[in-house]
Image (cartoon, rainbow over all chains, first blue to last red; front, side, top):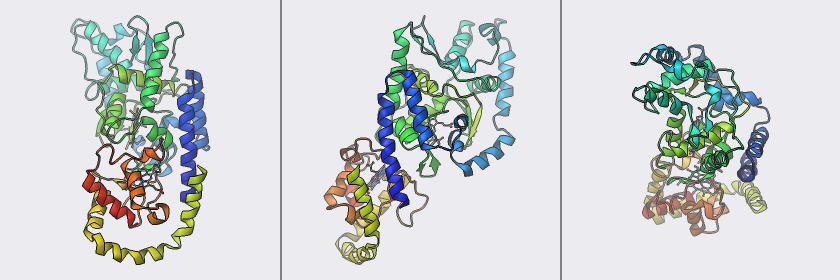
Length: 279
Length: 123
């Protein structure tokens, strides 16, 4: 009987996935996304989606809450603050590129009309470094996670608010490209992102509870016990592509930038709570 | 959708008949015991079938629950060939299926796939 019920929910979900894919405007997509999860997890508070799988997995949540008492990402925040404050060789620093201070979380990703592309925070940080004659940081591992941890921490409580400006049709195109990416099957195992995080969210894949896509971007960078360190959102994208045996794309290349644009838009309205910790 | 539901109700009914199916097993072992055993290994191997990532199988270690438990196969499939199609490419029957197309995408070799079919057919 339990299995029968599962099978039925799976089928209902399958229909839901299609509706989500067919909605036309970004506003409608967002509504469809939110409604999908509301139906799937009627007892989950909207803002709790920022906690990923722990919003729907009470056992995992207990372990996680214990971990959060001594946050493993704390040293990274401190390192990042030092980076933020340390002048470059030319005497300038991040402060000069970002005069409003380090609480930059909710400003990215954003549409850069001049460049005609989605601007992400790591890309903006590297643009700042290069403009000042410094070497850019690697996008997945290493010190970029320090500065991102600091910025995420300073941005806690800001509300995700990705804008798709209507005065430049290319912005909507970038969003649409990211959305298409999300629903496209890839790799030998033939999965789309949506198969795991929409269609099967809450189900168990071997030993992992699949997290809802809602809130997926709010807590990055994230300390993962499996990595033993903090990693970026694009590192996670890479991992999720690899596990279906698809060739990952370039971090902060066009595909992943557009994906980030779409995925972050889907978290609009949710508070930022990075850096996060996951198993 | 309705067809599927019926199938499931059918399963509930046939589980009681399972005991009967065990009686058939020795005949299968006689016919291809090795293929069944090897098929099981391939099905459980994380680098090959990894069926347990999504399916429960009776007495299997830490299975996922994305997909229906693999039980009473003979009640659900009229023939081995039909079962083979499901494993070859699940999207033929369900275009939205999350199940990897083991044959079509060459995730399993022909020989391995045949063995997995032999094994799953005994469940």
